[in-house]
Amino acid sequence: MRDKIDALTQNLAYTIVGKNEAIRLVLVALLAGGHALLEDVPGVGKTLLAKALARSIDGKFQRLQCTPDLLPTDITGTNIWNPKSGEFHFLPGPVFANVLLTDEINRATPRTQSALLEVMEEQQVTADGVSRAVPTPFFVIATQNPIEYQGTFPLPEAQMDRFMLSLSLGYPSEAEELQMLQRLHKGINVADLQPCISLAEVQELRQIVAQIKVDISLQQYILDLVRATRCDEEITLGVSPRGTVALHRATQALAFLLGRDYAIPDDVKFLAPHVLCHRLIPTGGRSAKTVMERLLRVVPIP
Image 1 (tube, rainbow, N blue to C red):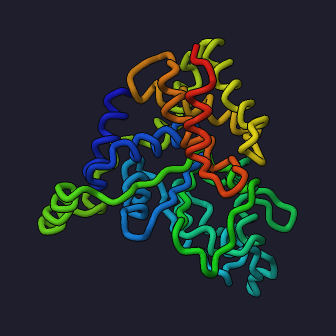
Image 2: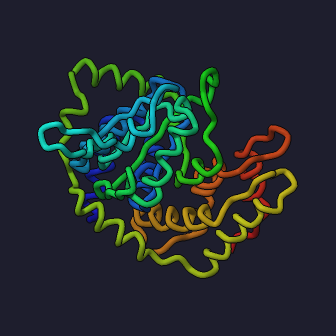
């Protein structure tokens, strides 16, 4: 399995140049059974990363472009009438995939955004009173532009809480961008990637990750960080218990990716800004990242 993880990481790094930290965070979310929110400007490789991941795990990829006129049934699917059989048949929506890229999720209306709440939490879709399971593993990568707000609908707290972590790819360095051009010149693209891990093996890896040891003192450290967000004067809304569980699972996944069968405080410190910041509502227009960095300095480390 260690060889499989290394091959998967190399596959993604072959496509996304110089973004090793972002790749690691996406794999953390995948192996921990969560979802990832990419907040970045257009054109930095978000779609490419999602496609490369789906190709690498030999999974079904679907892309959903969110617009204000998108309907909930455009996401989940709907029942259509078949005049030949005289019955309704369910036409599955794009959520019936292994990797779902929800592009510019904040351009969809709140009603449409809410169509993702059930499937992201319970891996099933309910239409006309009938619940249907989506393929496993099911992994959502959502994107939104943090700069352009015209014609957008900010994600509510309940929706943000469904994402295990948030991250940003950022612009590449000059050397990395030159390397991108060289690969483009050679005609290298996502279609050239070969699957290096099966969907069944992804499920098996998730079970292994769940067995990674987290000492009770480290669990207490996670709890102290989360509870500090609930009573801090600079935070209006703190992290929910779902955030506590998300940080614990993400810590296990990161420890596994780094080749350990146990977690350490540095795992928690690295992941805390990515797992907790998007769940916070700071007061007075403060930056959630700045507030989180202060809490990491204040809360005692075991």
